[in-house]
Image (cartoon, rainbow, N blue to C red; front, side, top):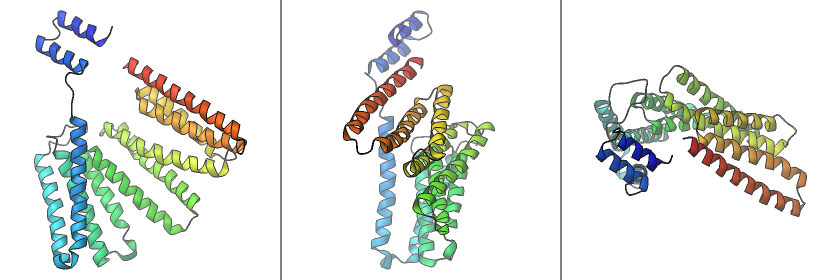
Amino acid sequence: MDISELLQKMFYEKKLSAKQFSTLRDIHSGKIFSFHRELRCFLYIGILLIVAGTGLTIRQYLANLGDIAIILSLTLCFTAAFFYCFIKAPPFATDEVASPHIAYDYVLFFGCAFFAMDIAYIETQFHILGDSWKSYLLISSALFLLLAYRFDNRLVLSMALSTLAAWFGFTLSDYRLSFEKYYREYAILYGIVVLLPGYLFRRLDIKKHFFDIYLNFAIHFLCIALLSGIFEYKIFSLYFPSLLLVCAALAFYSLKVRKFLYMLYAVVYGYIGISIVMIDHIFGQTFFMFTYFIVTSLLVIGTIFIISRKFRENE
């Protein structure tokens, strides 16, 4: 039974009113569609342009404005944004909470961006923490994390995890490791550090819907680090079986939660890892390399298409 037949059946069984039936039928046929994602995208771009414009203004008129005026202006901007969010925010809840209106999330993002700009400018001009300036990144990450949970904002949570990644990178760079080793150790450690609290909060039923954000960050950092190890050591290390294990876990989790995205990650990262190993064995043999990539890429695309259709059918 397709959607149209289901709607007809529910209408005849008096489960839908005439108005509801008409609206749902128009949505299904494509007569009604939403610009929600497009509007969100334009709002994000607008906020970023405002922040970028402020930064360019500060850079161009630095001498005329003066340090105190710049700091006070940035402080006023993020304070006003945070004050607005606290006034309009619904009570805190461990479950997902809807935003009061569409601009609310962007005002919070706006405030976080100007807070980061403010403390970066203060440290750049006055060097308050000196060699420990990286602590600002950790402080910002902690603040963004608290704000994300208080106001139930996925974008601010992403800012918190991105800022934490920057802190990890600058901190581990002090050990002067080789680039390959430095990147892999940083990425693997960061992935684990991000995944563990995300899983803990999920188990405690605290903003369970945030777990996908944690998991996406952890997946990409872990898989890219493992691919880097495979590229250097090929199959003669734990990187290759570790990547296969991660991909298998992703595929299992995807089937469990019925989310195609994680299956896509498993297929793509697994294919790249296997391809790196295969290229090492057939490198220089142009015909075999060409045949391998043509055949396997078609198989992977076909597999992704079939899996995607199965997921849609099950939904």
